[in-house]
Image (cartoon, rainbow, N blue to C red; front, side, top):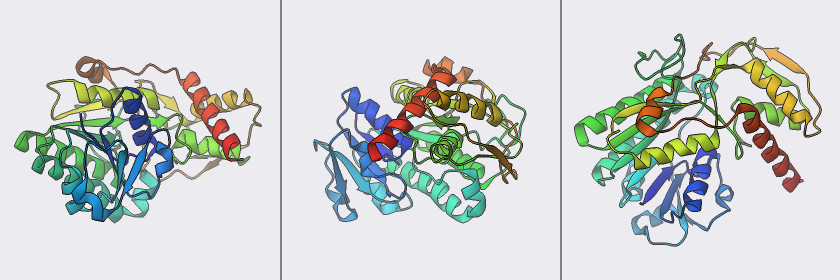
Length: 331
């Protein structure tokens, strides 16, 4: 299978590629503008950086993973890069609610038009499958657990742009036969997340830097925290299962955890690594953040044969170990 992965140098993309390489896959192409991730995240395998003037000469039989340095908003590049792909895993995005509130135009341009560009590239290049990374944000402020039949009412530009991506995935399945799957990820954490701004990574960076942990709001807001390896298994399942085109799946743990609870669990884990416990401070709630969010993942279990397996405390321990090892290696 020829894999095209947008955002492949990021946290989720590099974890997916690591798993694919481990399983023997050697035909992988990456699209990344390298604004956040770097080729160093794929240092576990051989890579080749390809500039825009080389997109017309790409070859799936190269021994190295090709990293095409391109922005997903470049429609012409998408058409060239996707040629010959069997599956596109679209992970590249403008991520995060606060960033989208601050700059809604960039969020729209990147998440809606960027997704459209690669769906259109899939259509024109006869790419069979398209896996879209969505989130719980399209649903908005509803009574959880979130499931796939809940009517979406996004409360942030990020939620709106991800909902737009889901809608275009549905269109490209029904109108053009592209086997699209939209995966609504929970809050992803785990090894490889050093540069993420999500809750667990943010707290850990503050702890390691001996800064106070800052919680926005009163900490009672809830999320569904999913370990990276569990998430990767769901993506791989989408590459294998039949008759799931046009579907949306909640990919999380079906467990509701408050931000206060995740902070307490993390502080207990870090003490086992000899780290001091910092002060916890509370700041104003952020615009666009929902009060409660966790998922009903029964549809993913039924159709993908998938469910989360990692225990939260063990997952946090693995994440802390990664942060500590990375700090030691860079010191």
